Image (tube, rainbow, N blue to C red; front, side):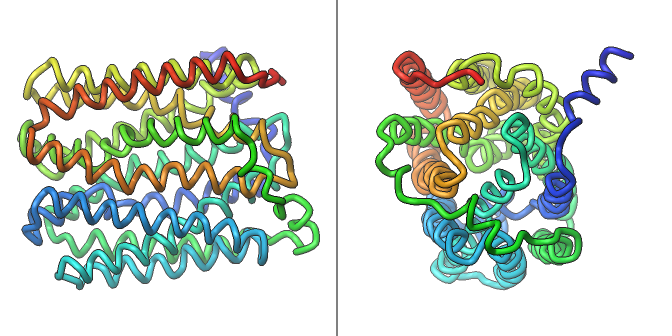
Length: 399
């Protein structure tokens, strides 16, 4: 127990006060994460949309996210990361509340697009802020602490969301919206913004990220991985509901297992691995584990325990990929180029959200889940091979 306590203490030591404050703000925000994990369930069961229509709505969210990440990067360079984070959280909260009163397919698509554009502008601003407030030697852990807050909140949000959905779906939208607004207020009250002059030194960047050929290959591979990653929060809940027969509360508990495990383990894992090997090596292990999660769904049949086993593998895969994705682009960037590297990385995920949920939903709707899982496994294997090749060609230093 003494060794374990020391390990956890060392994993969390040395991070700056603003990094911890940002993590608290992120926890407040993500503890209300309820709408997106249950959006496909809400659209199909409450509004009686088809699975294909629900997939299109999530793809529209992805389109808005691409616009938001791009604009967020541009605004971060021009006005700074603090106001972008504040207004993104505040206005996004309002749009979540508005969304619960819409019923038409096209009006929901329009609101989702605006909501995603505003909400995802937060991502590059937050990445730039984390880089600004952290030190080079603990930057990967600083990003991981932020992810810990996200996943700890996610351990609470879907579980509570599942209970609230059993009462009324409107509670999901109001809770998600109010926690966004609360996070914006907490940011304003708890964190003193950097002076614009100081912030510009670290945030403003030339367009070198778009001419980094190796990084562009990395972005393409991240996009391929993200195509499979977004099935976890879009199509897999439908599989749990329609094939495994889980209730909304049970779905919420299984999804919350993902966030809880990450909150307990990821920081220690990153502390033990960071700067000890190539980021692409750890990423490759994670991608193979991700394939294993879908292999369980493909081979083990429609049993409730399969949901837990698969989610466990997918969760470990996430811990082995996401922190080292961030480490990779952070290692390649400099203080003068970090904003655009963060934006391109974010766009890879947003672009995957355009294609992934809709494509997965279409395959599940027309061919069945038995065809979807092998396709996702094959895509993971192809992505793993791509990262192996990238790791061999990339002379990334171990620092």
